[in-house]
Image (cartoon, rainbow, N blue to C red; front, side, top):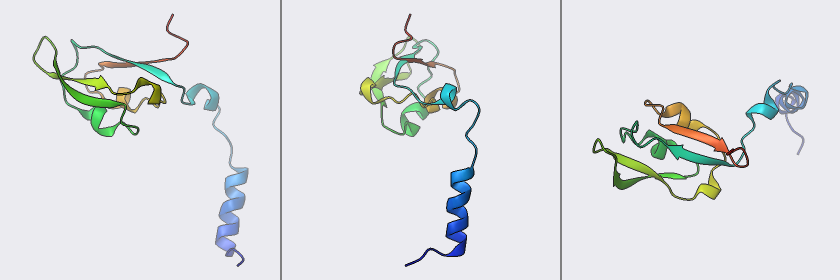
Length: 101
């Protein structure tokens, strides 16, 4: 069965579409997750929206009494940065593996 004209046009557009200038810079890389336990207020956004379930809410408490997120499996982290973006307290930092110096 032949594709409709609209599908053919869309496929052609996708092939011709330009790549972002910062594609290499913004590409995801396996990363190590650092959580600032003093800043974290236990909102759970990072754990709730982590696309791979790398972050999960734990039972450990920080000095202020808030529950802290834990890293379930650090090897699964792609370094997408969604947790960093969503954290209202700026308590999460991602460091690409190999750049820990």
